[in-house]
Length: 195
Image 1: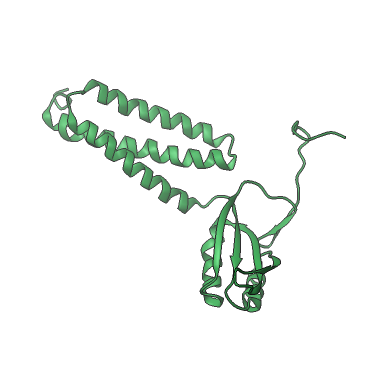
Image 2: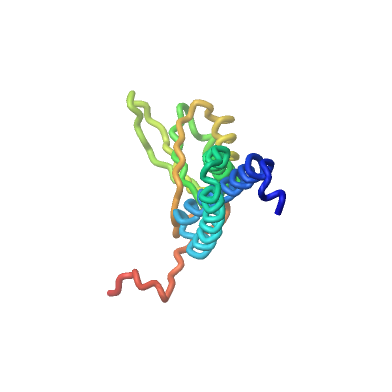
């Protein structure tokens, strides 16, 4: 009990606890938002539960020590650090699929051949650039963890190629990283239209 009432606790230990609890709850919140966007219906609420419990503990400690400026600084610093760490964690987890659009600056035959040899499904579209240059635009849906490998392949064959990457919520009837994706019907899906 003596430690709880000491200056060491009030000015060092308590702010550190608040700081690390904010890192935890904001990191969990960042991951939770990503899981909500990707449709993880069970995991997102579970993360939300722990996020709010940790937040309540941190805020209750601040409310008990309103005269302690270090608690406010720790709260704000933990929020900032939690956002950063949450983004890093999300990049490491790499869940889901993305669509890549590749607009090459030169002949794409070698790039197309290499991507197909690595097992990627490609859709090629004849296109014309702003200056009238004709080329094949490449569309591909890949797993997020494969993005860096594809970028290395693009840069080795066509270093000045323009590419864009977007998240994909769902895929059906396609080809992703050597896997054929078929549309799955759910008999309990009441959003389907009848005849």
